[in-house]
Image (tube, rainbow, N blue to C red; front, side):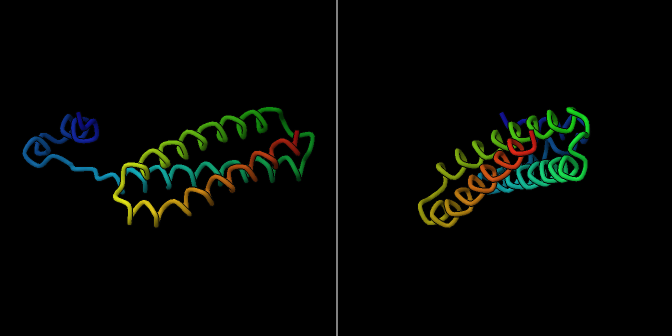
Length: 114
């Protein structure tokens, strides 16, 4: 079931005649965009904690929540990459590794801010 096409067709009946087709690489890009956004949010939270170490625990818990969401997006990206043809997979695997390293760096920054 393509839930993207289904939810869109509820709002736009024309979609029944023109279903949306989401390719694996499009899904990868969506997860990538989510991951980039979440890493940016974590950066903002960490910067706020560095400027004001006494700032609310809410910022810290939000950063931790966003790290968990980023981890889930990264896992989804990894699963999508594994389903791609070899040539495409080989071109995206370094990007996934870099994102994994970036996520680890953010985790260390949040741990330091604790």
